Image 1 (tube, rainbow, N blue to C red):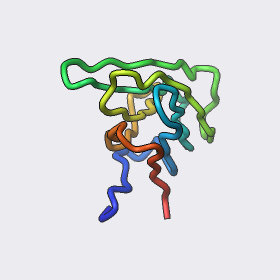
Image 2 (image 1 turned 90 degrees about the vertical axis):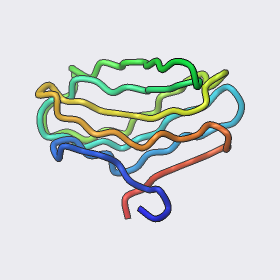
Image 3 (image 1 turned 30 degrees about the horizontal axis):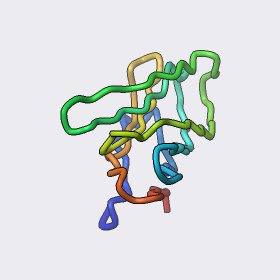
Image 4 (image 1 turned 180 degrees about the vertical axis):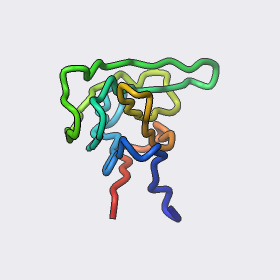
Length: 111
């Protein structure tokens, strides 16, 4: 936690690692997620200092008690921060802290 490595969870969804990789406008979010109930969707949330928006990716094809590595490319142009979240069908979720998009690569890993 001292380094800023943490995530928030209701317990049924866990994010064991998270990274924003790349430089310039083209970045990739990489996240390892585990869940109990079937996963409903993951989302990339971002802001530019004026507004907040998100990209929702359906995961309803994934079974209960699962684990998956996500790689989600996104356009970082004009965006100041980004975060990742995962939600199951019972509205349990987990999300990471927002990452400023000024550095080339940022990651959070469970130790």
